[in-house]
Length: 322
Image 1 (spheres, rainbow, N blue to C red):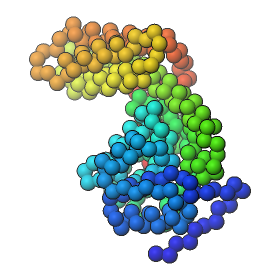
Image 2: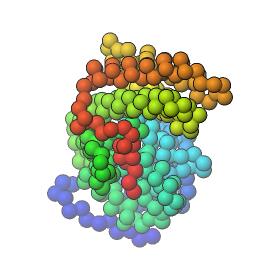
Image 3: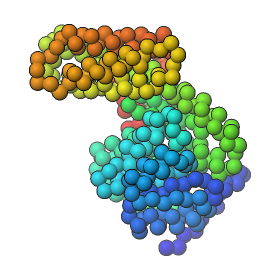
Image 4: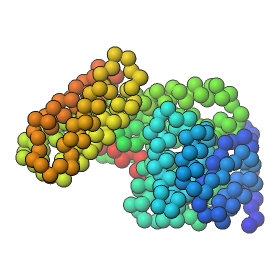
């Protein structure tokens, strides 16, 4: 395969030789092709992996600027690892540029993958030029991040949904560009820390809004006698996941009641969901009371405005547009 590297028109010279790159592709032919393209484009600091466990372990233990990976290793989804990178705001790789490759053109599959927070999803087969163009595009700029109750990642909405408010956007560091320009890493780290703090605050506020919404929705189902409805179990599951997220994100707060209250919610959800026995209304009422208390604690600690936070759950699909 003959490949010609296009000329870079920017006045700033990008040196990709220092960019910390992970190529994680199961198919050896595709992997060698991607490695060849990157090598001709000037990439030198490349780690290649071909199995899911190795990828997961490497990203837990090493900082990476650019990840190029297929979406699946056999039946295991790399999308889940990418989501962990975005959601774990203590990770060194929360802002890595992530480009995923797939040959699966099913719309529901693509929609599910892109919701992991990747920067791009490319359909194979891809040309060398297409891959280089995407790398150059992300070297020049990256989209700001958006936060909802189930998504942290690049904002891909073409326009806000009718009747909904725009979620706040957060500018995040471009690690790929910073490394290629040999920018001061201390300054990049400071920029990243500020962005992480902002994203974490928005996620906690978003979780608080979500708890209020779920509390109201569950009370309406109970009062209507619809505790056997499918939504009842779905909402309980959402409550448990939201409480678990809050427990993690507020663990280091001082004078903080949220982790303890969240633990109560998690315990009550476990006791309530998935049982064939009649619903224990007293237990569910306690559960919903705890939700209100958590939301109140968050409102006191992190006062927000309606402008900052769109209503739940309308913003859930902020990153879903393909």
